[in-house]
Image (cartoon, rainbow, N blue to C red; front, side, top):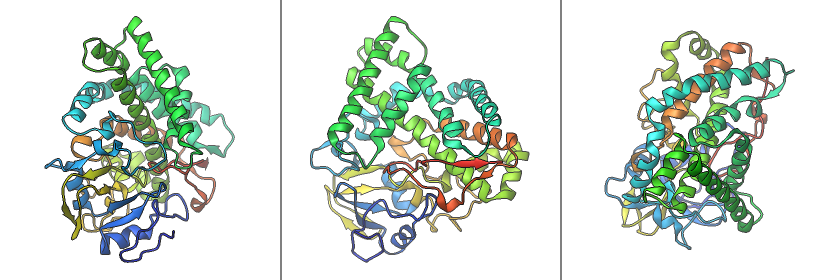
Length: 402
């Protein structure tokens, strides 16, 4: 099935890209002509793709609670891959259950907690950059920096020991793929990760700690959550806490290199860094996927009537490039008013780890470009290719030289 625009069609999703950082023109065409178009997922499931900013914002905030994530767990509900989503995750629960789970984890992601992590974040970044200086370019930035920092930070926050970092990444990477050979293989990976989490929880019960796993084990002993809750929560946070930031760092590096005048200011003027980080998040989608939900009543979106029981998918990266909200949306303009961007979602399902991701971007990017002022891509931009994941824009490699 081809991904060109045909009114009333049902193109294959994700849309084809010539290279990793090309924004498919089909998004713009759908925003203009069919903002709640039907698309076909790799599983063959058909969903409504909502591409306009204001429509997406309404769905994410969901004031009337008509967009259900819990219904995604039903056997006949659409999904991105052959492995059905487990119930009880933050992404597959509705209020008030969703809020119960968020409250259990929210204390680990406060601004105060993240601020306390920043010295370790900086030390980890510096250590990796020290090692990078000793290498002969070109180097793969994914392996040398943009993956190790976020996985080290989320594992530290959760309470996963350093020797578990590689295991966690491998399991998460497997669970995100859209080209798995079978649902049985995906389920096997999920069960291995679940077993590891429960073993770690038992260790934390014997050796109490003040990390998130230690806090959650205490909540378990108080009857506030069960084994299933713990596994689903930690599994989700592992994936969301490092794969997304990895994607953000890679995209931000490429964007800054594409805008050398902005890069100079980013490195030399600390007062502009926060604004630059927000614009980098807005313009760089972490993936083609996004929040998926099932309608519980009939609605109208973008002039299209959609029936209860249909699924809607919000590709937040495309919505962040809606010209109805942002002038010249494809341009990197750090000075623009962008604080309402949808890069971290919204409403009851907004990203818990947003403060952590912002801190990682700020520290990693400023440190990288100060240490390597002549950093540049070692291959043409057009040669950068994504791994076959629905949810995230994960590069195979990001070759850099200096």
